[in-house]
Length: 340
Image (cartoon, rainbow, N blue to C red; front, side, top):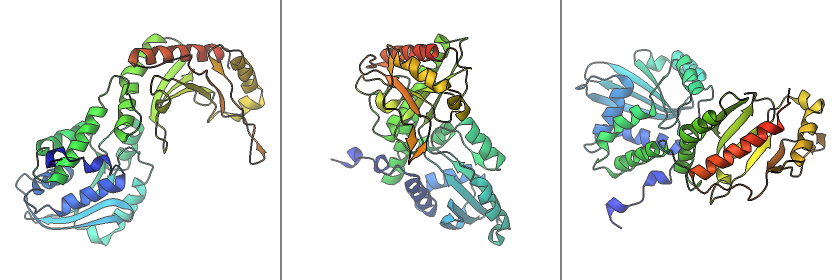
């Protein structure tokens, strides 16, 4: 195996801490002949440096007041900069930026600095996520902007820089997927599923069920390794909904679930849920599994109340998957037809 065939480090180093380490390494090597072009490109983008502005000294810190990456540097223009980077890969911002603002604003160390606060996520940015970042006074860049910034350095002579940019461009390709992915094993597979659901599955479902009482959404299942495609009856997220998970749609298989997570407990207390369960038991497409009515000795209403019967639906390719989703949604809407 030669250097050009070497497996990419960032295929394995996929966590945010790995990206933190890369950014710290990149900025600290601003004066390295092979690394500096990429390092300067990010610093100019993040801090608005002039094209010919040179760094005289630079200091970095990981986890300064829990902020992922902090960089203090001065330039030959006589300016001092304090750059703070909140770094994400596939997770989203969870209201920590306001807390960071308090530490930044109260620090005597940076009062004479030009403060730059960057939310760096080379991946999918959600509308609510972008709003929280903006409301906190931080700046973000769309993934396309990050890719365009890094592409000129894809041929870098430094192997770490080159591998990181290859990794970023691979993520860009995955987020452009329009056909059903074949695997659900890697972070790139999950990005491809997210793209497929957004760019193909949801638009085709919206066209198929136009004017009907259903709304479609997709998201990553937090700490679990799959992407969700969900159908909500009447757009209501507090009643039973249909969920399709990417990991259950591999090798031609297909499963859809009827779930009650987040459901208003009053519906269960009024017997609505039990009526739905009885209707599912009579369905030709769905069945009820083992229903859980208690947890740790305390009564609960069942969270998973139905799922498609094994091997009734297949999803080998994109068209089969779309047809399986259509049939599942159609039956789900019929089961929910008189839910008030």
